[in-house]
Amino acid sequence: MSVSEIAPEMPVSTPGSEAPSGADVRRVLLVWDAPNLDMGLGAILGGRPTAAYRPRFDALGRWLLARTAEISVSSKGRIEAEATVFTNIAPGTADVVRPWVEALRNVGFAVFAKPKIDEDSDVDADMLAHIAARQRDGGLAGIMVASADGQAFREPLEAIAAKGIPAQVLGFREHASWAVTSDTLGFVDLEDIPGVFREPLPRVSLESLPDEGAWLQPFRPLSALLTSRPGQGVA
Figure 1 (cartoon, one colour):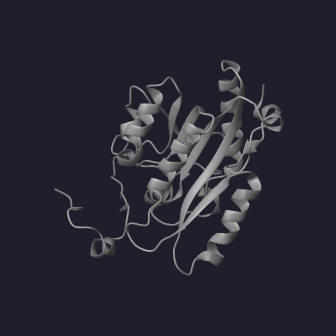
Figure 2 (cartoon, one colour; figure 1 turned 30 degrees about the horizontal axis):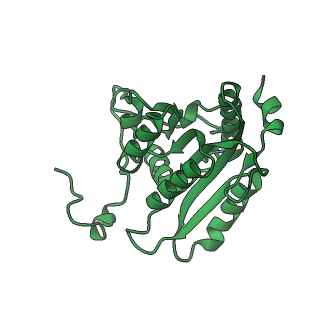
Figure 3 (cartoon, rainbow, N blue to C red; figure 1 turned 90 degrees about the vertical axis):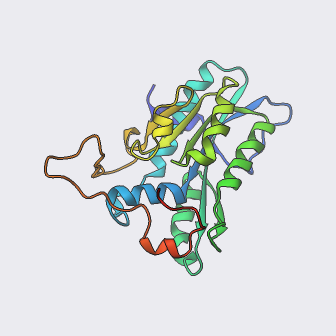
């Protein structure tokens, strides 16, 4: 069965959607860590992505629907897909970000947006709280977290996987070695999902360096050291 045949039968749900009374509904939840993935993609490209290198969330949504259909085959009760994006909104950028947020919502993704006030205004706690809420509210049939942040997600995902729930990390293999080598978590490179990127990413890793060498761009500007917390240096 093709993805196009699966998608019309399994609409993506949002955090506000409710199951019919008495229905046994569990969710296959996708959580997209936008700040972390934006940083990872920028490191691969060496700058802001052009249109050819921006992820296509419609393709990601179709992949999620197909994965949900696979899980449904061996599961009892009703299974629904839920796609969510968590992001920060820096002061003065609302008008720039608004078309992207509206496009996500139009595809079927729910968006949690949080003001970027300072270094502590990240969305890690919000993502973890949403995952925990979905575990309580009907339960999870599967969980996919798109992020390279092993410090935030590794232990919670491993705890979910230990309960027999499929748990996967989506991201870039260069930045998520903790997930690539995990014995309990699955890993899917975003570039391996059909249609997510229009063009192949110009990827360079330490394992596949060209003979002439290659530049590896910083993950963040050097000026970030002026606002980072003490103790975040390199040994």
